[in-house]
Image 1 (cartoon, one colour):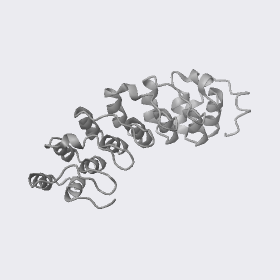
Image 2: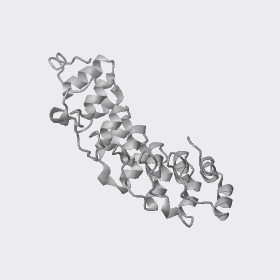
Image 3: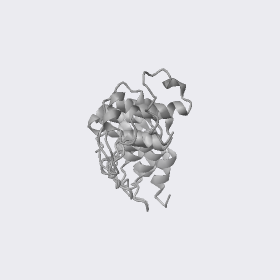
Image 4: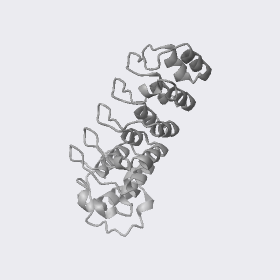
Length: 239
């Protein structure tokens, strides 16, 4: 972190009375620190819900709700990345816009990277159109959940009928799950009710191959799947 104003640090620490006093004395709410972060960025980062509400409801709160930091992240990005679902809900209620950061990521992408299921759900409840959007690398939220082995997030996205999207390198979510040995999220995707889509969308592995790999690694939850593995595992070089 870099030097900021007293209002930045009071917002970080949730010192509500200090914030009130600073604002009454004329503290400038939209001053940035050297990382281009406002006091609201600090409140969003550290999960200070009451502080965030007070800043937003102050006379110039509208000036900071959509301000970007040096990475192009708004307070909504920051709250989503850290799993502060109540602050995410507050910001959305106050009209926060759905900007993208410098990597082309939405708040949903960042919540998926962190495995923050409540935050993912809160965002999609208001902005379901974010479900299949991709970042600058072509990664959708399901791909990011698969990369980071968050099975509950992956299951939620699949239950909402997310599209299966290959990224700019041509890899799908299941490709990354298997390559990175993320067995939990791979199992969620393979055993999903629409598991047959692996035949169409899997670039490295088909469904039989995925089940074969999971079985080879001792995941007994897939032993009763009605899939004939003979011949399906012969070409699975990652088992």
